[in-house]
Image 1 (tube, helix red, strand yellow):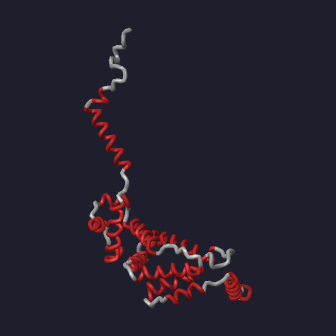
Image 2 (tube, rainbow, N blue to C red):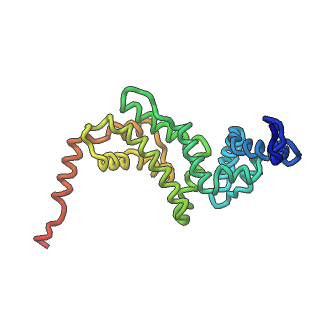
Length: 238
């Protein structure tokens, strides 16, 4: 039976473009592309970059820190750095989150008062006994002038406040509103950072325990709200 002259290849014989020089080149390109698409991030490079960023930020502050110096100290190329974090602000926000999660974890204590106390202890310890305090102070100061940095820092801070809120909830009445939880956090965490960033006054364990045990009950909040409403000027008499 005659064969079609347009295709004289034997059955299952690859076409020239699959086996010739062009085919080999195509295969190599496909393999390289697949390798690039599937290449996992090197954890060692991530760690080196974060350690470098931590050191530079602690020494120079946010404004004096450059991505070039971070990459150079980490021993990686700038392309490696920018593939992971597209900007200095993005890198700083990630660094703050990683350091906080590692050094101020959520306590597993069953006693909610003691769990919150340990959490506050870790905040004080990490800010006073490491370079984290210097990093935070630099970021807070620059946030007053840099809107994008302020937004990133607020995002980081909201996440940390949610963790603290979850530690407060078991202490107060289950019906306590989110607004009341926020007020409690202001009364508990606010004084700590006031001393850390502004006055420099010591923060002893007794001070922290007083903050924890001073968390108002639901009844106290209701009375406070009622009293505040009574103090409001009456528009009918003005």
